[in-house]
Length: 156
Picture 1 (cartoon, helix red, strand yellow):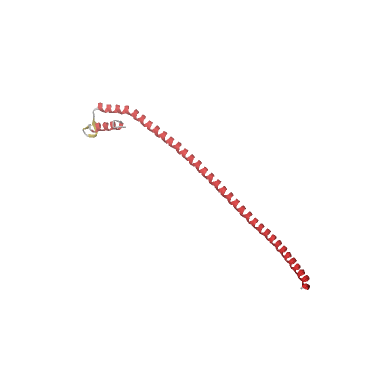
Picture 2 (cartoon, rainbow, N blue to C red):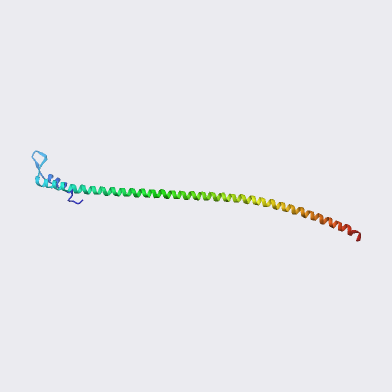
C-alpha cells in the first residue's frame, strides 16, 4: 500500500479538520470547507473495496502458505516416523542376529568342550589299552628271557 491509500486520505482529512477555523467560544468546533472533505471521503470509499480485496487476497495467500507448510510438516513427520520405524526394525534385526550369533557361539563352545572331553576319555582308554598291552608284552618278554636264560644256563 502506498501513500495514496486510505491512511493517507484519512491523514489528509485530519489535516483539513485541524486547519479549519475554530468556532467562537468552542475550541472543539471547527469550520471547514465541505467540498474537499466530501471529496476525500469519496476517495476513501473507492479505495476501501480495493484495499479490502487486497487484504483478503493476502489473507488467502497466507492461509495457502500455512496449509502448504502444514502438509509439508506432516509429510516430514511421516517420513521421520517411517525412518524411525525402519531404524528400529533394523536395530531389532541386528539385535536378534547378535543374539543368534551368541547362541551359536555358545553351542559351538559347548560342543567343543564335550568333544574335547570325549577325545580325552578316548585317548585315556587307548593309552590304558596300550599300557596294558605293553605290560603284557613286557611280561611275555620277561618270561621268554627267563626261559631262555634257564635253558641256556647249563650250557655255559
